[in-house]
Amino acid sequence: MDIFEILKKGESETVEFKERFNKETIISLVAFANTKGGKIIVGADRKGRVTGIKAGRETAQRYLNEIKVATYPQILPNVDEYEIQGKTVLVFEIKEYPVKPICFKNRYYKRVKNSNHLLTLDEIVDLQQQSLNISYDAYPLKENLSSLDTALLEKFVETINSRGRINLQDDLLTNLTKLKLIQAGKPTLAGMLLFGNHGFSIHIGRFKSEDTIIDDLLIKDPLLVALDEAMIFIKKHISLSYRFDGSLKRKESWQYPLEAIRELLLNSVVHRDYKHSSDIVIKVFDDRIVFTNPGRIYGNLTIKDLERDDYVSSIRNKLLAESFYLMGDIEKYGTGFIRIRKLIEDYPGVSYSISETGDFFKVEMRHTPTKPLLIPKTDLPEKLPENLPEKLPVIQRQIIENMLKNPKITYNELADITGKTRETIRVHINKLKEMNLIKRIGPDKGGYWEILGPQSTKHTKE
Image (cartoon, rainbow, N blue to C red; front, side, top):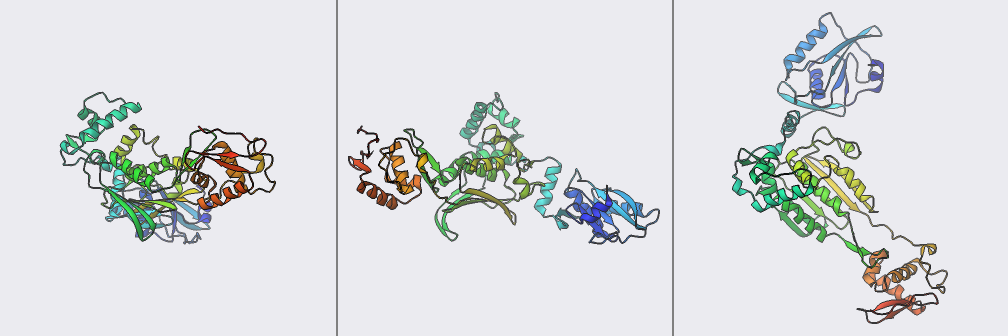
């Protein structure tokens, strides 16, 4: 350990300076033990300048005894003594404690950046569960098994077996007991969430503005059903267009990648804090979807961690995560936001952001319309008519190109492909007709477009 380098870098999430040993020193050690561990240099001011302390032969041991008496469970940091510029400093080092949380005189602290913060009651419970490897959704309830939907239970087991990640061959009760969704003949919270009337809700609304709602839905069904209902509502209220790639069949193009939306829905129900009675709230706007669910990021993860591809996830509700993994809805634990980033790469104009507000975790997926792809003349099909004017506007070249690909293309489809309004498309089509570059054969419904010119391809009506 290079103490001079530590003093030079200054205080941080894992380093603190104290001019003397006092109760604040012990509080910082407790906060370090409850977070990522850290070092305290006693005998230096806040700027890292060495002030020194008066230390005798038993000074360090006396301080260690004070730490043991004031903490529970008792912690015992390492301590080293240094002489710097003729002055004595003590360096206390504590690692992240395996059994958390540690308290100082019945008060619990955590380290946030370069300061100590009191833990809330929920954070205390979460730390206890993490250190004991306990999942909140594993607690058995007092409900009877008759309160679970038998059809959903059977479908659940059937889906798991079809995915092949595990083979469940016993009777239904034994299978669910093996998965810990039932304990001692009672459903766990996870079992009730998946198959029963659990009392938690997903509230989805379609908003025109922050204070104008035009449609909403409150979903209280078992999660196996609720996710599909939520997807149907969201798909109903986001844009859908169609594109053509030269084949006869048109392809759907959603405003957002549907797989990313489902990933965010799964994240909401799997990682939410079920100690809170608040709803999962999803707001669909013209240009964004906002997912807000109770519970901050679980464990020692931060928002910056979730933005990397190498983060290690901490799971609050392990039974729910395991269940959705076995059904194939989750590809791999702790990779949800990695998948979301990859899914939106193919959607220009779509981005997402993560934030925490109070006790809530929020993800916003935003769609910013991009300019339509301008097709240069060199990229047009070889069979375009030779009599096209040299300065023909790009939008008119796009119209002709797409009519060549699909002679039955409609005004609305051309508007979706080019990013223009239907009225704009109509104006340019009329101009192309006036220049005798295109011709409509047959009625609006059932007819088709013919591209005029010596090299155009004639199309006959089917």
